[in-house]
Length: 537
Image 1: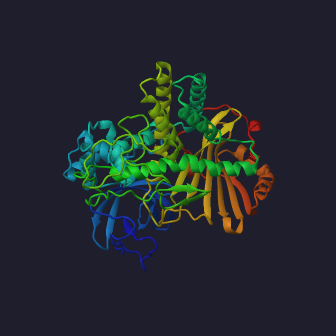
Image 2: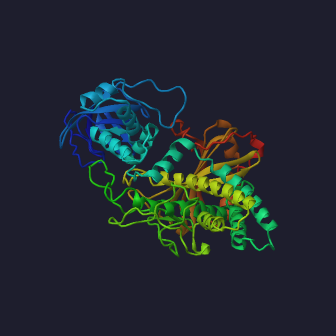
Image 3: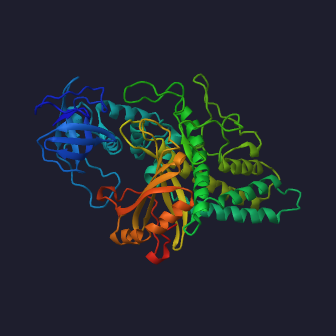
């Protein structure tokens, strides 16, 4: 198989092509790639390699959406030749990242001069799974990054490979968040529900102490405020359209901004000054944080601004654990432990940090009774887990490198109150090609939901805010759901019009087969019937 740069077509069939290694994918001899066939026209095939598009000429019969494994057999500045490799059988159970590997992977590593031990084989599988590509240099880099972790373990290899392929920092906190995202399947809705119950119990306990000399008045006020805020952290399917729109904006700001700002700060300190992680090109990774994401009044910008009242030394720890975010330091600074922030609790913009700071202040009091100490300790642990889950979601948002040819998006969890129980939907906000920001006046959105009875549903919207116009499409994974949605399109049109938009088009169709089973791992088991779901909401 010979590769053409996307957009070029040879004047006559030939095995010689015009591709330089300054194209969308850097190709070197011996490199291993996994690609998805996008389209086939005669002997020309378009391949998607981790969001990057290549055009190839091949005589190998391929089908659209087929996954192929390729090895670069020859590479020079103008000509790249690849061969299709035999792959191991796909697993029977569905998986978002099937471990498709060549049967001769071990022999291939040996041919590269790389020892085919358990560590390198695990790294190679992780690189192929998360980045669709393997090179000997990448294997060595990931191994070095992994060995640079304190108390490194074999089960961290896949996580480090993920961070490396996504060009993210590698440190203890990043590994913790990435592991949470890859393996723990954070149940955001259930965690928020449990946290709200714990807050209610804590507030009742604190109120029982009112009037006593040791009554923690500041903590009680902070818990009360947190309860009021969390009441807005979920939406019901029977919520009126105007209120639903306002709730979604509030949710993006509440559930999106805090972990994003926290992650951006922690990324400034991914390694000690004496050992910066390296990227694929062997150059040190910059110690400055990458562009973050901030949700603000329904828009997403390409920079995460500092808090209005920045806390000296960074945000306070959530529970005093070693997994807390590390405050920014200069490259000449030492890694001395930072004291707990002494700024007033009210100055912290993150509601989770405000509450954690108030709890830590109260736990530091020597006159605190044991019952209150235990209650606050449990609540502190829940805050830590919730912050970790939200941080892992933001890590996934930051894991897509800027690429002018791909349509990457940011995901925000939307807790839903449904008749059969709570579930989390995903709001997908597409960013501009080649940039990290979203154009607020021309925005593409998708709301993703997966229910046992209704199946997978994707609501795609193109919103032109300046003209107050939109077009929409609802894709369903099940035929019965598609029929139900089609019957409700007129009412949905009226609901969108009630929001003040001119609806230029609204259609319903089946979700393409290749797009199914791609929703988040948070699908919770529920028993629902079609009559219980308000499709218009």
